[in-house]
Length: 335
Image (cartoon, rainbow, N blue to C red; front, side):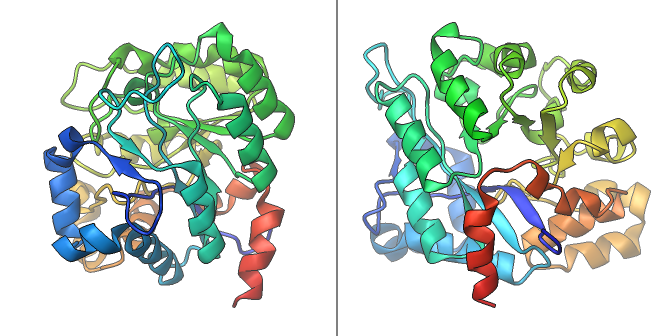
């Protein structure tokens, strides 16, 4: 697909307006990260009551249009499920249901559906079949927050469906989660991905498994590289790294040919992406120019370009994501 540039890691957000079915827990609503995001995006009290979910999706689509990107994968977010397969609202923090993800992508041709389905929900196989039928380009998991153990053999039927359909899993593994509370931190261990990899499931490891600089994370990037040699269907994205939690890793990742060859571009929007972390490397003039880019999706592209990521990273996603032929022609027809 010539000329297609995809950000494979962009978050939808929602509080339940616009008949979206989204939900946010009172505990998460009080977290500093949520309050900061609301403040940065200027969400008024009226929007939070009436239109926040649709407004957020429209804003994401507009940022894509005003950048050099052609598309972004809009990610959903499933909750935590108990032993009975029912949603556990006490441990869940946010739900962006798969139905809303597909509705948003129907409305905005710049967006591609990346729903989240917890394999421990009692209707998981029905929901993943629905997502396959409706053309999901990937499925998103955040195991430590969603209480998903990727090594659990009980979810092999789920993996078989993904492998047969060629739909990748975008999984946060390696470093700690910072935006959401971790329900079971041990589930972020990269080693737990060996089961789906052995079954042929295409995996995209978010954030290149970068450890958090101020946490006691094991650096699992050496293991990641070892597995890349073993599994040709293992990929990474470079999202969520140019911020306080991971910024030292980005220059070394960009200079590593083995990692770059398997990297897809991702911004992790709305997570901040800033150039001033690289002042010593890029110089004050270059950093100032990058910080003047108001569109944070485009700024993220330019920061990674400045640090040495080749443009191949922006155009590689069509070789990895599924069902793009169902969405890309529709988008091209609108321009």
